[in-house]
Image (cartoon, rainbow, N blue to C red; front, side, top):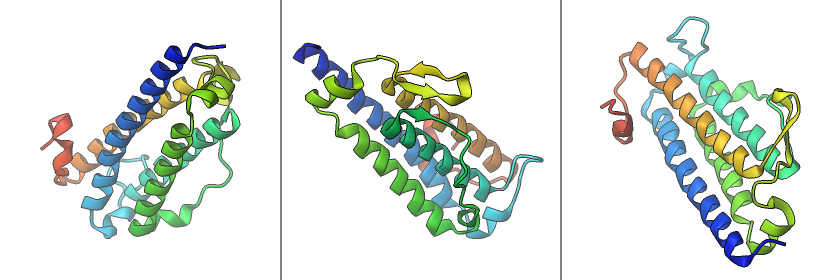
Length: 177
């Protein structure tokens, strides 16, 4: 059994991770908000997909991590890809927000008792299908999601640069405005 003090520390770490995730998600959301809907069908980089596909892919990845937190399996081989989202800016924005809120709600449910029951600090309990089924902890899964969001920010930066688009103001974080 974990000590209450340890659970409080883990809960604080989880809270911080959610704050960081929300910060990076805001960069992705603002980039979608800032473009004209007509750009969703533009593929600014050869073999990299359109703006719409990029944002839909980010949604798919978030769903993978949400499933991992709920079900204990991180699997990027989704069969429920909704390609109809790719050309609809409003639906992309709504889905980006909805999935993020589900992830944050899932993590924020973990009070001290649930930490002991399910998270067990950093015990590897999530099966990572893409990595030979190695086990990672839910805390590591959240960290990987944040890294994945940052990776997609880099891809979006390349898209924006390729199309000579103005970056949203919150992208000052990356020194791009």
